[in-house]
Every structure is written in C-alpha cells, then in structure tokens.
Image 1: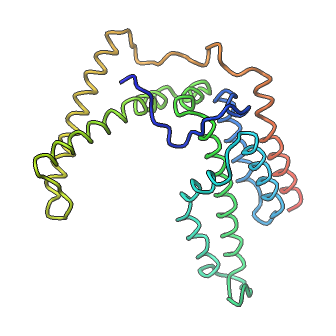
Image 2 (image 1 turned 90 degrees about the vertical axis):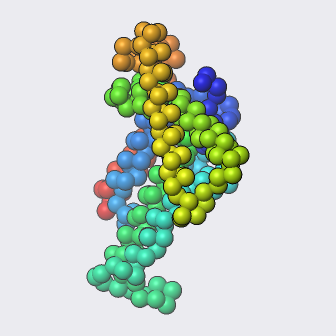
Image 3 (image 1 turned 90 degrees about the horizontal axis):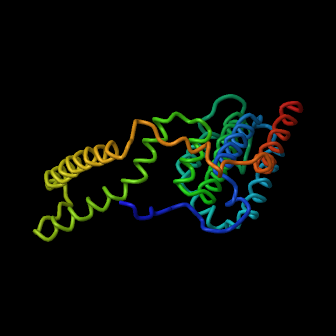
Length: 256
C-alpha cells in the first residue's frame, strides 16, 4: 500500500521547471489557458506567439517535442470535428483548395484547433514536470476544497491496489478455465465486476477505520503551510509566461 505509484505522464528530469513548486505551475498553466481562450480567433499572429511560449517552456523543461506530439493525439476527436466545421457551417462561403467552405466554419475550426492544441500542450507540460502527488499538494495549497483533494489523494493511493486486485481475480478466473470474451459470456464478466466492487468497499471500510485509529478527523494536513511552499521569487519566475500571454491577449483584443 505504501509502494510508489506509476506516473504515466511525468517526464523525470532536473530542469528549472521541475524544481518549481506545484502550486505556481498550476496557477501559471491556468492563467496561460485563460489568456489563450480570451484571444479573438481572428488574431492569428497571437496564437503563433503562444506557440513560441510553449516551445520555450518545453525547451527549459527538457521535454522532447516527440513526447508532446505523441501524447497530444488525445485531442484527435476534436480535430476531426474541427475539420468538418468548414463544410457544415452556414453563412458566407469561399473557395479553399478547390472546395466551397464556410468562412465562419473556417474560423470556428481554427479556433477549436488552435486553442485546443495550446491547452492540451500546456496541460501536458504541467503533467510532464509535476508528479500526480505534487499536483494534489499544489491544489491543496491553492485552497482547493478539501473534499476534492482528499478524494483525489485517496484515488491516487488506492487505484493501483484495486487494479492489482482485479488482475489477481482475472488470473484466478483464467486458471479455472473461465475466459469471458464474447457477448454470451458477459455474465461471468459482470460477476467479476460485482465481486471487485464488494472487495473494494470492504477494503475502503478497513482503510477508513485504520485512519480513524491514527487520528484522522476528516481533513488532510494543511500542506500549504509547509516549509516547501512557493517563495515570492518562484511566483515571479512562474508568472513570466502567463504575463507575456496576457499581454499578447490584451494586444489582440485591442487590435481586433
């Protein structure tokens, strides 16, 4: 139960971005995303500036472009939807690559593609430079509701335990000649899911009683008061990127 947790997105390194406290990175990512979202879609040059900022942060964090591109494929369904907008949109139409497309649909597709991609890349950079545990600590220091951070912390701590339990149950089922793969074998799969739920519920009760016996009162320690909280210098360093992004967004709003 006290074993380390698998970090699917964390990119282990010793860069200046990795060494920043998690709360400043979370705040910087949210502020950068808000600046991107507030930018008018017609300000094409502004999105180029945001892309330069993302590339600069990735270079400082020593995160390879290939790593980012492979994991940004998660937005592929939204990209496919964006490509359909020019053909489905109404209003004024124009010629693009020999095809009649909607001008408003083109801008809508660009808006989704540019802002979505920048948001995904910013989130990936945050995940690549911050462990899941530190993300929860950062949210706690930012005064995120205790109920949410506690749920996330418990999920992180015991998710792998439940995955291991499910793996052992599957091995036991296979050793008895039961391997439900087809529709008419769903009953065995459903039975296994129900058994896993009961085991998880019972284990949760045991864990909760163990926590009560160790002084748990319904609230996690207030980690934002710890000695490792961000300093003023670290806040200023992390605010560089969102400050530049906010300046670009403000300029784009004035010029639009």
